Amino acid sequence: MKTKQRKWLGASTALLVLTGMLSACSSASNESSSGAAATSGASKETVTLKVEMFDRGNAPAGAGSVDNNFWTQWIQKNFGDPNNIKMQFVPVPRNQEVDKLNVLMASGDAPDIVFTYDTNTINNYVKNGGLTDLGKLLDENGPNLKKFLGQEVLNYGIFSGKQYTLPAKRPLQYAHTSYIRKDWLDKLGMPVPKTTDEFYQALKAFKEKDPGQTGGKVIPYDFSAMNGTNISSPGLLISSFVKKISEEDFYATPELLKPGYKDGVQFLNKLNQEGLINPDFALDKDGKNFEKDVSNGLVGAFSALAAHPNLMGTGNVFDSLKKNVPGAEYVGMDPFTNEEGKRPKAIYDPIGAYLMIPKSSKHAAEAIKYLDWMSKPEVLFTLQNGIEGQHYTLENGYPKAITTDEAKKTFYNNTDIAMISNGKDFGAPDKNIEAASIQFPNYKELAKQTIINALNDGYTNPRFDRPIDAEIKNSKTLGDKAQEAVVKSVLAKPEDFSKTFDSIAAEYLKIGGQAVIDEKRAAYKEMKKK
Image 1 (cartoon, helix red, strand yellow):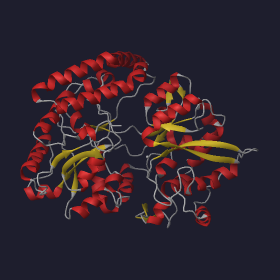
Image 2 (cartoon, rainbow, N blue to C red; image 1 turned 60 degrees about the horizontal axis):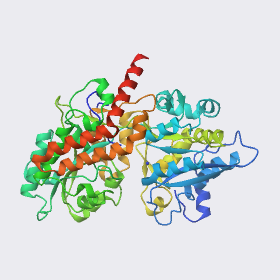
Image 3 (cartoon, helix red, strand yellow; image 1 turned 90 degrees about the vertical axis):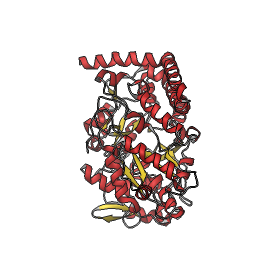
Protein backbone atom coordinates (compact mmCIF):
# COMPACT_ATOMS: atom_id res chain seq x y z
CA MET A 1 0.00 0.00 0.00
CA LYS A 2 1.60 3.26 -1.15
CA THR A 3 0.18 6.72 -0.51
CA LYS A 4 2.23 9.65 -1.69
CA GLN A 5 1.94 12.59 -4.00
CA ARG A 6 2.40 11.72 -7.67
CA LYS A 7 3.53 14.14 -10.33
CA TRP A 8 1.47 12.66 -13.13
CA LEU A 9 -2.12 13.59 -12.89
CA GLY A 10 -4.95 14.65 -10.72
CA ALA A 11 -8.40 13.22 -10.51
CA SER A 12 -11.10 15.48 -9.29
CA THR A 13 -12.38 13.25 -6.92
CA ALA A 14 -14.00 15.52 -4.27
CA LEU A 15 -19.62 13.13 6.94
CA LEU A 16 -28.19 11.95 17.23
CA VAL A 17 -30.80 11.68 17.83
CA LEU A 18 -33.70 11.99 20.27
CA THR A 19 -35.55 9.02 21.75
CA GLY A 20 -38.30 11.25 23.01
CA MET A 21 -37.62 10.15 26.57
CA LEU A 22 -35.67 12.47 28.83
CA SER A 23 -34.84 9.61 31.14
CA ALA A 24 -33.06 7.78 28.34
CA CYS A 25 -30.99 10.83 27.51
CA SER A 26 -30.13 11.32 31.17
CA SER A 27 -29.10 7.69 31.45
CA ALA A 28 -26.86 7.97 28.42
CA SER A 29 -25.21 11.06 29.85
CA ASN A 30 -24.52 9.32 33.11
CA GLU A 31 -22.89 6.44 31.25
CA SER A 32 -20.60 8.72 29.25
CA SER A 33 -16.85 8.57 29.59
CA SER A 34 -15.53 9.93 32.84
CA GLY A 35 -14.02 13.38 32.59
CA ALA A 36 -16.15 14.32 29.59
CA ALA A 37 -17.70 17.35 31.27
CA ALA A 38 -15.85 20.65 31.05
CA THR A 39 -15.97 22.61 34.28
CA SER A 40 -13.16 25.15 34.06
CA GLY A 41 -13.16 28.58 32.52
CA ALA A 42 -16.97 28.91 32.65
CA SER A 43 -18.43 32.24 31.57
CA LYS A 44 -20.07 34.36 34.26
CA GLU A 45 -23.01 35.10 31.98
CA THR A 46 -24.69 32.59 29.73
CA VAL A 47 -23.83 33.03 26.06
CA THR A 48 -25.27 31.26 23.04
CA LEU A 49 -22.80 29.40 20.82
CA LYS A 50 -24.13 28.61 17.34
CA VAL A 51 -22.67 25.63 15.47
CA GLU A 52 -23.42 24.63 11.87
CA MET A 53 -24.62 21.07 11.37
CA PHE A 54 -25.23 19.22 8.11
CA ASP A 55 -28.82 18.11 7.57
CA ARG A 56 -28.44 14.98 5.46
CA GLY A 57 -32.13 14.15 5.49
CA ASN A 58 -31.48 10.62 6.73
CA ALA A 59 -32.68 10.71 10.33
CA PRO A 60 -34.35 7.45 11.42
CA ALA A 61 -37.95 7.65 12.60
CA GLY A 62 -38.13 8.87 16.18
CA ALA A 63 -34.60 10.28 16.09
CA GLY A 64 -35.49 13.90 16.64
CA SER A 65 -34.18 16.79 14.58
CA VAL A 66 -30.69 17.89 13.59
CA ASP A 67 -30.78 20.67 16.18
CA ASN A 68 -32.46 18.72 19.00
CA ASN A 69 -31.50 15.12 19.55
CA PHE A 70 -29.68 12.71 21.82
CA TRP A 71 -26.22 14.11 21.05
CA THR A 72 -27.04 17.80 21.04
CA GLN A 73 -28.50 17.25 24.50
CA TRP A 74 -25.43 15.24 25.56
CA ILE A 75 -23.17 18.08 24.45
CA GLN A 76 -25.29 20.65 26.24
CA LYS A 77 -25.09 18.69 29.50
CA ASN A 78 -21.39 17.84 29.30
CA PHE A 79 -20.00 21.03 27.78
CA GLY A 80 -22.63 23.73 27.64
CA ASP A 81 -24.03 23.62 31.17
CA PRO A 82 -20.66 23.53 33.01
CA ASN A 83 -19.47 26.53 30.98
CA ASN A 84 -22.66 28.63 31.04
CA ILE A 85 -22.97 28.22 27.28
CA LYS A 86 -26.23 27.54 25.50
CA MET A 87 -25.51 25.36 22.47
CA GLN A 88 -27.53 26.08 19.34
CA PHE A 89 -27.09 23.84 16.31
CA VAL A 90 -27.98 25.36 12.94
CA PRO A 91 -29.12 22.87 10.26
CA VAL A 92 -27.75 23.33 6.73
CA PRO A 93 -28.83 20.95 3.92
CA ARG A 94 -25.79 18.89 2.89
CA ASN A 95 -26.45 19.18 -0.84
CA GLN A 96 -26.84 22.97 -0.57
CA GLU A 97 -24.16 23.63 2.00
CA VAL A 98 -22.00 26.07 0.03
CA ASP A 99 -24.92 28.15 -1.25
CA LYS A 100 -26.56 28.24 2.19
CA LEU A 101 -23.28 29.11 3.90
CA ASN A 102 -22.67 31.93 1.44
CA VAL A 103 -26.08 33.41 2.27
CA LEU A 104 -25.41 33.16 6.02
CA MET A 105 -21.96 34.70 5.68
CA ALA A 106 -23.20 37.54 3.48
CA SER A 107 -26.01 38.36 5.92
CA GLY A 108 -23.65 38.48 8.92
CA ASP A 109 -25.82 35.87 10.62
CA ALA A 110 -23.56 32.84 10.19
CA PRO A 111 -23.10 30.46 13.15
CA ASP A 112 -20.01 30.88 15.32
CA ILE A 113 -18.58 27.66 13.88
CA VAL A 114 -19.08 26.88 10.20
CA PHE A 115 -17.39 24.40 7.92
CA THR A 116 -17.02 23.35 4.31
CA TYR A 117 -14.95 21.03 2.14
CA ASP A 118 -14.74 23.57 -0.67
CA THR A 119 -11.38 25.37 -0.75
CA ASN A 120 -12.55 27.92 -3.30
CA THR A 121 -15.26 29.02 -0.89
CA ILE A 122 -12.66 29.40 1.84
CA ASN A 123 -10.32 31.33 -0.43
CA ASN A 124 -13.17 33.69 -1.24
CA TYR A 125 -13.84 34.30 2.47
CA VAL A 126 -10.13 34.87 3.10
CA LYS A 127 -9.90 37.32 0.21
CA ASN A 128 -12.91 39.27 1.44
CA GLY A 129 -11.83 39.36 5.09
CA GLY A 130 -14.71 37.23 6.31
CA LEU A 131 -12.83 34.93 8.69
CA THR A 132 -11.33 35.29 12.15
CA ASP A 133 -7.58 34.84 12.52
CA LEU A 134 -7.43 31.89 14.92
CA GLY A 135 -3.72 31.91 15.75
CA LYS A 136 -3.81 33.68 19.11
CA LEU A 137 -7.18 32.19 20.08
CA LEU A 138 -5.82 28.72 19.45
CA ASP A 139 -2.74 29.36 21.58
CA GLU A 140 -4.85 30.69 24.45
CA ASN A 141 -7.83 28.33 24.39
CA GLY A 142 -6.93 25.25 22.38
CA PRO A 143 -4.08 23.18 23.88
CA ASN A 144 -5.92 19.87 23.39
CA LEU A 145 -7.05 20.92 19.92
CA LYS A 146 -3.51 21.81 18.81
CA LYS A 147 -2.16 18.52 20.15
CA PHE A 148 -4.86 16.46 18.46
CA LEU A 149 -4.63 18.10 15.05
CA GLY A 150 -0.85 18.43 14.92
CA GLN A 151 1.12 20.92 12.86
CA GLU A 152 0.85 19.08 9.53
CA VAL A 153 -2.93 19.28 9.63
CA LEU A 154 -2.94 22.84 10.98
CA ASN A 155 -0.71 23.94 8.10
CA TYR A 156 -3.53 23.14 5.69
CA GLY A 157 -5.57 25.79 7.47
CA ILE A 158 -3.06 28.57 6.89
CA PHE A 159 -4.01 30.95 4.11
CA SER A 160 -2.05 34.07 3.25
CA GLY A 161 0.14 33.40 6.29
CA LYS A 162 -2.66 33.27 8.86
CA GLN A 163 -4.53 30.43 10.60
CA TYR A 164 -7.93 31.19 9.12
CA THR A 165 -9.28 27.64 9.34
CA LEU A 166 -8.94 24.54 11.48
CA PRO A 167 -8.95 21.48 9.21
CA ALA A 168 -10.45 18.31 10.59
CA LYS A 169 -8.00 15.43 10.85
CA ARG A 170 -8.42 12.56 8.37
CA PRO A 171 -6.62 9.40 9.57
CA LEU A 172 -7.50 7.42 6.42
CA GLN A 173 -7.22 9.23 3.09
CA TYR A 174 -8.85 6.72 0.76
CA ALA A 175 -11.40 7.87 -1.81
CA HIS A 176 -12.46 5.93 -4.95
CA THR A 177 -12.00 2.30 -5.86
CA SER A 178 -13.65 -0.26 -8.16
CA TYR A 179 -15.97 -3.24 -7.71
CA ILE A 180 -16.88 -6.19 -9.96
CA ARG A 181 -19.35 -9.09 -9.82
CA LYS A 182 -17.29 -12.09 -8.74
CA ASP A 183 -20.15 -14.55 -9.36
CA TRP A 184 -20.36 -13.40 -12.99
CA LEU A 185 -16.61 -13.82 -13.46
CA ASP A 186 -16.80 -17.30 -11.96
CA LYS A 187 -19.57 -18.33 -14.35
CA LEU A 188 -17.43 -17.15 -17.26
CA GLY A 189 -14.22 -18.68 -15.92
CA MET A 190 -12.53 -15.27 -15.85
CA PRO A 191 -10.19 -13.84 -13.17
CA VAL A 192 -10.64 -10.53 -11.39
CA PRO A 193 -9.14 -7.99 -13.84
CA LYS A 194 -5.66 -6.71 -13.06
CA THR A 195 -5.19 -4.45 -16.10
CA THR A 196 -7.35 -2.06 -18.08
CA ASP A 197 -7.46 -4.49 -21.00
CA GLU A 198 -8.57 -7.38 -18.77
CA PHE A 199 -11.27 -5.06 -17.41
CA TYR A 200 -12.42 -4.30 -20.96
CA GLN A 201 -12.52 -7.99 -21.86
CA ALA A 202 -14.65 -8.71 -18.79
CA LEU A 203 -17.12 -5.98 -19.77
CA LYS A 204 -17.45 -7.41 -23.27
CA ALA A 205 -18.09 -10.89 -21.85
CA PHE A 206 -20.73 -9.49 -19.49
CA LYS A 207 -22.48 -7.86 -22.44
CA GLU A 208 -22.25 -10.77 -24.85
CA LYS A 209 -22.93 -13.67 -22.49
CA ASP A 210 -25.12 -11.98 -19.85
CA PRO A 211 -24.06 -14.28 -16.99
CA GLY A 212 -26.59 -12.61 -14.69
CA GLN A 213 -29.44 -13.56 -17.03
CA THR A 214 -30.78 -10.02 -17.03
CA GLY A 215 -32.70 -10.46 -20.25
CA GLY A 216 -30.55 -7.95 -22.10
CA LYS A 217 -30.72 -5.31 -19.34
CA VAL A 218 -27.10 -5.81 -18.27
CA ILE A 219 -24.99 -2.70 -17.63
CA PRO A 220 -21.38 -3.93 -17.77
CA TYR A 221 -19.90 -0.72 -16.24
CA ASP A 222 -22.14 1.77 -14.49
CA PHE A 223 -21.78 5.21 -12.94
CA SER A 224 -23.91 8.27 -12.37
CA ALA A 225 -23.55 11.97 -13.19
CA MET A 226 -20.03 13.18 -12.46
CA ASN A 227 -21.28 16.45 -11.00
CA GLY A 228 -24.08 15.00 -8.92
CA THR A 229 -24.40 14.24 -5.22
CA ASN A 230 -23.53 10.57 -5.54
CA ILE A 231 -20.81 8.09 -4.68
CA SER A 232 -19.97 6.64 -8.11
CA SER A 233 -17.75 8.16 -10.79
CA PRO A 234 -15.76 7.11 -13.88
CA GLY A 235 -13.03 9.60 -12.96
CA LEU A 236 -10.81 6.84 -11.61
CA LEU A 237 -10.78 5.16 -15.01
CA ILE A 238 -10.33 8.36 -17.02
CA SER A 239 -7.44 9.66 -14.95
CA SER A 240 -5.47 6.43 -15.33
CA PHE A 241 -4.80 7.48 -18.93
CA VAL A 242 -3.05 10.72 -17.88
CA LYS A 243 0.65 10.76 -18.71
CA LYS A 244 3.59 11.73 -16.52
CA ILE A 245 4.08 15.49 -16.36
CA SER A 246 6.40 17.95 -14.64
CA GLU A 247 5.72 19.17 -11.13
CA GLU A 248 4.89 22.65 -12.40
CA ASP A 249 2.38 21.25 -14.89
CA PHE A 250 0.93 19.04 -12.17
CA TYR A 251 0.27 22.17 -10.10
CA ALA A 252 -0.95 24.39 -12.92
CA THR A 253 -2.84 22.23 -15.42
CA PRO A 254 -6.53 21.46 -14.83
CA GLU A 255 -7.51 17.81 -15.03
CA LEU A 256 -9.42 18.26 -18.26
CA LEU A 257 -6.31 19.49 -20.08
CA LYS A 258 -3.70 17.10 -18.73
CA PRO A 259 -2.06 15.02 -21.49
CA GLY A 260 -3.86 11.70 -21.76
CA TYR A 261 -7.09 12.78 -20.09
CA LYS A 262 -8.75 13.07 -23.50
CA ASP A 263 -7.67 9.47 -24.20
CA GLY A 264 -9.46 8.35 -21.06
CA VAL A 265 -12.65 10.11 -22.12
CA GLN A 266 -12.30 8.53 -25.58
CA PHE A 267 -12.06 5.10 -23.96
CA LEU A 268 -15.39 5.79 -22.27
CA ASN A 269 -16.76 6.88 -25.65
CA LYS A 270 -15.68 3.48 -27.01
CA LEU A 271 -17.43 1.72 -24.11
CA ASN A 272 -20.57 3.70 -24.81
CA GLN A 273 -20.51 2.86 -28.52
CA GLU A 274 -20.24 -0.82 -27.67
CA GLY A 275 -23.12 -0.69 -25.18
CA LEU A 276 -20.87 -1.32 -22.17
CA ILE A 277 -21.99 1.64 -20.03
CA ASN A 278 -25.32 3.21 -19.10
CA PRO A 279 -25.99 5.85 -21.80
CA ASP A 280 -28.24 7.77 -19.39
CA PHE A 281 -25.54 8.27 -16.74
CA ALA A 282 -25.65 12.06 -17.01
CA LEU A 283 -29.32 12.14 -15.97
CA ASP A 284 -28.64 10.33 -12.68
CA LYS A 285 -27.81 13.41 -10.60
CA ASP A 286 -28.40 11.87 -7.17
CA GLY A 287 -27.08 8.39 -7.94
CA LYS A 288 -30.38 6.70 -7.08
CA ASN A 289 -30.73 5.02 -10.47
CA PHE A 290 -27.20 3.67 -10.13
CA GLU A 291 -27.99 2.25 -6.69
CA LYS A 292 -31.23 0.73 -7.98
CA ASP A 293 -29.47 -0.93 -10.92
CA VAL A 294 -26.83 -2.42 -8.62
CA SER A 295 -29.51 -3.60 -6.16
CA ASN A 296 -31.42 -5.30 -8.96
CA GLY A 297 -28.38 -7.22 -10.18
CA LEU A 298 -27.95 -5.44 -13.51
CA VAL A 299 -24.45 -3.99 -13.00
CA GLY A 300 -21.26 -5.90 -13.72
CA ALA A 301 -18.71 -3.38 -12.44
CA PHE A 302 -18.50 0.16 -11.14
CA SER A 303 -16.15 2.66 -9.54
CA ALA A 304 -17.27 4.39 -6.35
CA LEU A 305 -16.14 5.50 -2.92
CA ALA A 306 -14.53 2.70 -0.94
CA ALA A 307 -16.17 1.15 2.13
CA HIS A 308 -19.22 3.37 1.79
CA PRO A 309 -22.32 2.95 3.99
CA ASN A 310 -24.65 3.50 1.02
CA LEU A 311 -23.25 0.28 -0.39
CA MET A 312 -22.30 -1.81 2.62
CA GLY A 313 -24.39 -0.37 5.43
CA THR A 314 -27.13 -2.53 6.91
CA GLY A 315 -30.18 -2.51 4.65
CA ASN A 316 -28.43 -0.66 1.84
CA VAL A 317 -27.44 -1.54 -1.73
CA PHE A 318 -25.50 -4.78 -1.23
CA ASP A 319 -28.05 -6.11 1.27
CA SER A 320 -30.81 -5.38 -1.25
CA LEU A 321 -28.79 -7.14 -3.96
CA LYS A 322 -28.48 -10.27 -1.82
CA LYS A 323 -32.25 -10.35 -1.35
CA ASN A 324 -33.01 -9.70 -5.00
CA VAL A 325 -30.31 -11.94 -6.48
CA PRO A 326 -29.20 -14.75 -4.16
CA GLY A 327 -25.56 -15.61 -4.71
CA ALA A 328 -24.62 -12.22 -6.15
CA GLU A 329 -21.24 -11.04 -4.89
CA TYR A 330 -19.05 -8.01 -5.55
CA VAL A 331 -15.30 -8.03 -4.90
CA GLY A 332 -12.78 -5.22 -5.03
CA MET A 333 -10.55 -4.73 -8.05
CA ASP A 334 -7.77 -2.29 -8.97
CA PRO A 335 -7.21 -2.74 -12.73
CA PHE A 336 -6.73 0.72 -14.18
CA THR A 337 -3.04 0.91 -15.10
CA ASN A 338 -1.16 3.87 -16.58
CA GLU A 339 1.79 3.93 -18.98
CA GLU A 340 4.19 3.08 -16.15
CA GLY A 341 2.19 0.10 -14.95
CA LYS A 342 1.07 2.00 -11.86
CA ARG A 343 -2.50 2.36 -10.63
CA PRO A 344 -2.52 6.03 -9.63
CA LYS A 345 -5.57 7.52 -8.01
CA ALA A 346 -6.29 10.74 -6.19
CA ILE A 347 -6.75 10.37 -2.46
CA TYR A 348 -7.94 12.88 0.07
CA ASP A 349 -5.57 15.25 1.81
CA PRO A 350 -4.84 14.29 5.45
CA ILE A 351 -7.71 16.61 6.38
CA GLY A 352 -11.49 16.63 6.20
CA ALA A 353 -13.73 19.66 6.37
CA TYR A 354 -12.33 23.12 7.09
CA LEU A 355 -13.72 24.58 10.31
CA MET A 356 -13.99 28.37 10.44
CA ILE A 357 -15.12 31.14 12.75
CA PRO A 358 -16.69 34.04 10.83
CA LYS A 359 -15.35 37.51 11.49
CA SER A 360 -18.86 38.45 12.60
CA SER A 361 -18.77 35.99 15.52
CA LYS A 362 -18.79 37.51 19.01
CA HIS A 363 -17.96 34.19 20.65
CA ALA A 364 -14.76 33.08 18.98
CA ALA A 365 -13.11 32.17 22.30
CA GLU A 366 -16.05 29.99 23.30
CA ALA A 367 -15.97 28.35 19.87
CA ILE A 368 -12.32 27.33 20.31
CA LYS A 369 -13.05 26.12 23.86
CA TYR A 370 -15.82 23.90 22.47
CA LEU A 371 -13.52 22.36 19.86
CA ASP A 372 -10.79 21.99 22.47
CA TRP A 373 -13.18 20.08 24.74
CA MET A 374 -14.15 17.88 21.82
CA SER A 375 -10.45 17.10 21.27
CA LYS A 376 -10.08 15.36 24.63
CA PRO A 377 -9.61 11.65 23.90
CA GLU A 378 -12.48 10.47 26.11
CA VAL A 379 -14.90 13.03 24.66
CA LEU A 380 -13.97 12.38 21.04
CA PHE A 381 -14.19 8.61 21.52
CA THR A 382 -17.70 8.94 22.95
CA LEU A 383 -18.88 11.30 20.22
CA GLN A 384 -17.52 9.01 17.50
CA ASN A 385 -18.64 5.68 18.96
CA GLY A 386 -21.42 6.38 21.42
CA ILE A 387 -22.07 4.62 24.73
CA GLU A 388 -20.70 1.10 25.17
CA GLY A 389 -23.53 -1.43 25.28
CA GLN A 390 -25.98 1.07 23.83
CA HIS A 391 -24.24 2.07 20.60
CA TYR A 392 -21.26 -0.25 20.30
CA THR A 393 -19.56 -3.38 21.57
CA LEU A 394 -15.84 -4.07 21.51
CA GLU A 395 -14.49 -6.58 18.98
CA ASN A 396 -10.78 -7.32 19.31
CA GLY A 397 -10.43 -3.98 21.07
CA TYR A 398 -12.22 -2.00 18.35
CA PRO A 399 -15.70 -0.50 18.73
CA LYS A 400 -18.29 -2.26 16.57
CA ALA A 401 -21.55 -0.44 16.01
CA ILE A 402 -24.79 -1.91 17.34
CA THR A 403 -27.25 -1.75 14.45
CA THR A 404 -30.59 -2.25 16.16
CA ASP A 405 -33.35 0.23 15.34
CA GLU A 406 -33.18 1.58 18.87
CA ALA A 407 -29.44 2.15 18.63
CA LYS A 408 -29.88 3.92 15.28
CA LYS A 409 -32.36 6.34 16.85
CA THR A 410 -29.62 7.69 19.07
CA PHE A 411 -26.60 7.27 16.82
CA TYR A 412 -26.32 8.41 13.22
CA ASN A 413 -24.19 10.98 11.39
CA ASN A 414 -21.88 11.30 14.37
CA THR A 415 -19.05 12.15 11.99
CA ASP A 416 -20.80 15.52 11.66
CA ILE A 417 -21.05 15.97 15.42
CA ALA A 418 -17.38 15.01 15.98
CA MET A 419 -16.36 17.62 13.44
CA ILE A 420 -12.66 17.83 14.32
CA SER A 421 -11.98 14.33 12.99
CA ASN A 422 -13.00 12.83 9.69
CA GLY A 423 -12.62 9.24 10.80
CA LYS A 424 -11.24 7.33 13.78
CA ASP A 425 -7.54 7.17 14.57
CA PHE A 426 -6.16 4.09 16.33
CA GLY A 427 -2.52 4.98 15.83
CA ALA A 428 -1.52 3.12 12.65
CA PRO A 429 -2.94 2.68 9.12
CA ASP A 430 -3.54 -1.07 9.46
CA LYS A 431 -5.40 -0.54 12.73
CA ASN A 432 -7.47 2.26 11.20
CA ILE A 433 -8.37 0.06 8.24
CA GLU A 434 -9.35 -2.77 10.57
CA ALA A 435 -11.50 -0.44 12.68
CA ALA A 436 -13.17 1.00 9.57
CA SER A 437 -13.97 -2.41 8.10
CA ILE A 438 -15.50 -3.68 11.36
CA GLN A 439 -18.30 -1.19 10.85
CA PHE A 440 -19.55 -3.34 7.95
CA PRO A 441 -19.98 -6.76 9.59
CA ASN A 442 -21.55 -8.39 6.52
CA TYR A 443 -18.84 -7.05 4.19
CA LYS A 444 -15.79 -6.71 6.39
CA GLU A 445 -13.27 -8.26 3.99
CA LEU A 446 -14.71 -6.40 1.01
CA ALA A 447 -14.55 -3.10 2.90
CA LYS A 448 -10.93 -3.77 3.87
CA GLN A 449 -9.94 -4.66 0.31
CA THR A 450 -11.61 -1.59 -1.19
CA ILE A 451 -9.80 0.68 1.27
CA ILE A 452 -6.44 -0.92 0.48
CA ASN A 453 -7.10 -0.65 -3.26
CA ALA A 454 -8.20 2.98 -2.92
CA LEU A 455 -4.92 3.85 -1.19
CA ASN A 456 -2.68 1.93 -3.60
CA ASP A 457 -0.46 4.33 -5.60
CA GLY A 458 -2.48 7.18 -4.14
CA TYR A 459 -1.46 10.81 -4.50
CA THR A 460 -2.78 14.07 -3.10
CA ASN A 461 -3.62 16.98 -5.34
CA PRO A 462 -1.39 20.08 -5.07
CA ARG A 463 -2.08 22.82 -2.58
CA PHE A 464 -1.25 26.50 -2.95
CA ASP A 465 -0.39 28.67 0.02
CA ARG A 466 -2.56 31.53 -1.24
CA PRO A 467 -5.94 32.05 -2.88
CA ILE A 468 -5.98 31.71 -6.67
CA ASP A 469 -8.25 34.61 -7.63
CA ALA A 470 -9.04 33.36 -11.12
CA GLU A 471 -10.10 30.01 -9.69
CA ILE A 472 -12.31 31.67 -7.08
CA LYS A 473 -13.98 33.76 -9.76
CA ASN A 474 -14.46 31.00 -12.32
CA SER A 475 -14.66 27.79 -10.29
CA LYS A 476 -18.31 26.88 -10.86
CA THR A 477 -18.31 27.96 -14.51
CA LEU A 478 -15.18 25.94 -15.24
CA GLY A 479 -16.43 22.94 -13.30
CA ASP A 480 -19.64 22.91 -15.29
CA LYS A 481 -17.75 23.29 -18.57
CA ALA A 482 -15.40 20.41 -17.71
CA GLN A 483 -18.38 18.16 -16.98
CA GLU A 484 -19.97 19.23 -20.25
CA ALA A 485 -16.80 18.26 -22.08
CA VAL A 486 -16.82 14.77 -20.61
CA VAL A 487 -20.53 14.08 -21.00
CA LYS A 488 -20.87 15.33 -24.57
CA SER A 489 -17.64 13.67 -25.63
CA VAL A 490 -18.59 10.29 -24.15
CA LEU A 491 -21.95 10.41 -25.92
CA ALA A 492 -20.62 11.77 -29.26
CA LYS A 493 -20.39 9.69 -32.40
CA PRO A 494 -16.85 8.30 -32.77
CA GLU A 495 -16.15 10.48 -35.80
CA ASP A 496 -17.24 13.57 -33.84
CA PHE A 497 -15.35 12.80 -30.65
CA SER A 498 -12.21 14.91 -31.14
CA LYS A 499 -14.12 17.85 -32.56
CA THR A 500 -16.51 17.77 -29.59
CA PHE A 501 -13.85 17.47 -26.91
CA ASP A 502 -11.46 19.99 -28.45
CA SER A 503 -14.11 22.65 -29.02
CA ILE A 504 -15.37 22.50 -25.42
CA ALA A 505 -11.79 22.45 -24.11
CA ALA A 506 -11.13 25.62 -26.11
CA GLU A 507 -14.21 27.22 -24.57
CA TYR A 508 -12.91 26.16 -21.16
CA LEU A 509 -9.71 28.11 -21.71
CA LYS A 510 -11.55 31.19 -22.96
CA ILE A 511 -13.99 31.45 -20.04
CA GLY A 512 -11.26 31.51 -17.39
CA GLY A 513 -9.31 28.30 -17.70
CA GLN A 514 -6.24 29.99 -19.19
CA ALA A 515 -6.34 32.66 -16.49
CA VAL A 516 -6.33 29.96 -13.80
CA ILE A 517 -3.39 28.18 -15.45
CA ASP A 518 -1.38 31.42 -15.71
CA GLU A 519 -2.03 32.41 -12.10
CA LYS A 520 -1.21 28.94 -10.79
CA ARG A 521 2.07 28.89 -12.71
CA ALA A 522 3.04 32.21 -11.20
CA ALA A 523 2.02 31.07 -7.71
CA TYR A 524 3.98 27.82 -8.11
CA LYS A 525 7.13 29.72 -9.10
CA GLU A 526 6.74 32.06 -6.14
CA MET A 527 6.36 29.11 -3.75
CA LYS A 528 9.48 27.45 -5.15
CA LYS A 529 11.51 30.59 -4.41
CA LYS A 530 10.77 30.32 -0.68
